[in-house]
Image (cartoon, rainbow, N blue to C red):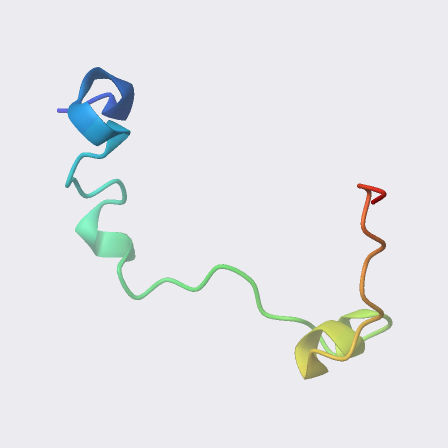
Length: 53
């Protein structure tokens, strides 16, 4: 079963969260349309830092 990390020292627990049947599943693949082209290339404009120095 699930082990809540905050109940353990260091707040870390070795456990597998995803079912094994999803080990080879992808998460996101850009479609090559619109702004997703920049996502695919990794050339999108960097986001502004919300924290000002």
